Amino acid sequence: MPHAEASRPAVAIIGAGWAGLACALQLVRNGFRPVVFESGPEPGGRARRAQLKNQWRDNGQHLMLSGCQALRCLCNDIGVSLIQKPFIYTDGTRGLSLTGRKGRFGLLAALFQAQGFSWFERLSLLRALLSLQRHDWQTPSHQTVAQWLSHTQQPTSLIKTFWEPLALAISNTPIDRASMSRFASVLRDTLGSGAGALDLLQPTADLSTCIVFPLIRAIESGGGEVRCHSRIRAITPMNDKGYKLSLTEGDPELDFDYVVLTVPPWSLKTITLPFNSELLAQRFGHQPIATVYLGFDETVRLPAPLFQLDGPTASDARIWAIDRADCGEPGVIAISLSAAGHWATLNHDDLALSCMDRLRIATGIHNPCLWHRVVSVRRATPEALPSARMQPNEQQPLPGLFLAGDWTHPDYPATLEAALQSGNAVSRQILSSK
Ligand SMILES: Cc1cc2nc3c(=O)[nH]c(=O)nc-3n(C[C@H](O)[C@H](O)[C@H](O)COP(=O)(O)OP(=O)(O)OC[C@H]3O[C@@H](n4cnc5c(N)ncnc54)[C@H](O)[C@@H]3O)c2cc1C
Image 1 (cartoon, rainbow, N blue to C red):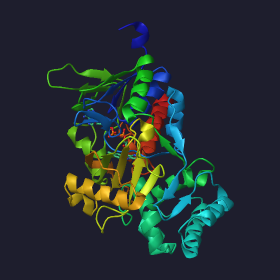
Image 2 (spheres, rainbow, N blue to C red):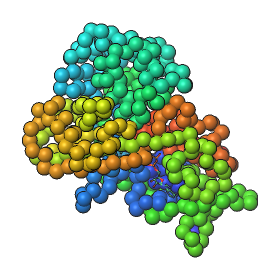
Image 3 (cartoon, helix red, strand yellow):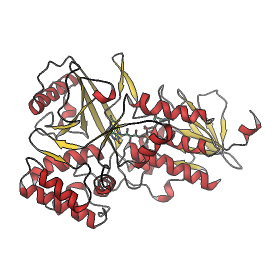
Image 4 (tube, helix red, strand yellow):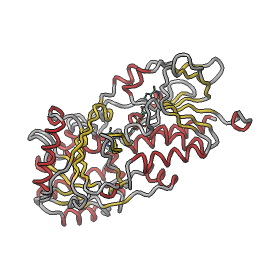
């Protein structure tokens, strides 16, 4: 190893999801030598492309909003442009554009121009948003979204058609379990952050091609490494300082000055760790997400970039359809189903048929659907429960050993933004401890 390399502190990052890669980028930019170990064959973690019936396609539709600061900074940093589209909430009969609205007067204007909402609904929505704003987007840490909706006396029709689908898409947790304070943090950084903070950001290709691969190129060009097919089995502290990492049995152990664990909570138990992670992991459950991809002829477009549909069964919450034309897939519509519902009992074909039906009713698209694919991820995200929170001292269980990942974020639900911010935060901790 050249001398200059040997003098750079070595950091092992376990997991090549967005948290691990963001952390590696910051470290490489600051003179460290990060090596990212990924057990799977592809980098990107839960937000990457996957081969579905011989075609590369995202392993799930991901919604990204322009108020996500870490995402925007990352894209600027690695030279990636995302397409920005107005967030217009619509289901064909009701419509509301919150894009570009700031403050009380912006909200008033948006609600005045909204279509299909009764005046009672508009006033209730305005009252709830202004009350959040007045309290600086802070809510009691134990409160669920459902409790807050009841406390602010939101009408059932508004909950069903506005609050519940929005909160489900953001928190991936049923509203009677989801933490209101985490949901409110996202509202603060989008709705509450002024013009353009609630726009949709769309990648111009699949997530790996558009973001993950350019990110890895930036890490590698700075001297970092990303190794796929590299499952870490054990982390052992060394006597003086640093850690030894064990990969496959028989392989030599590797020495590092620092270790950053970015695996999801349910994967902690698969690694032999020098601290007890059992109680920590138990606090975090998980929720599924299914994405139904429907393929039409290339001319078919959704009437709006994001369209709300009735759920696949009568007892399901409303769901979101997204046009994939800007992601290089003209004629493809992705429908996202967040958090366990009755839909999870349907087989993939029935689920796709039901979504197709809902799409036709809401949008009037009657072209024949040429193909469908359903990607169902059982453990898509940790649940955003009010009780599922890491204590500040749990972030660094031992000197030089850190935890990052979407679930470790103090304020956000488990999202891409939470993952990126957590990776950046740990890189800052390592830089300051040098
Ligand atoms: C279908 C789906 C839809 C989603 N939709 C959205 C959305 O619309 N908007 C949004 O913001 N977020 C969404 N999310 C959530 C988002 O994808 C995650 O919050 C984010 O990707 C988590 O990144 P992470 O780096 O924290 O964890 P991960 O992506 O889970 O990365 C951890 C990595 O560690 C690896 N690993 C585990 N054990 C080991 C080991 N022993 N050795 C080496 N490597 C190991 C794993 O293989 C994985 O690649 C969605 C997730 C899914 C699954």
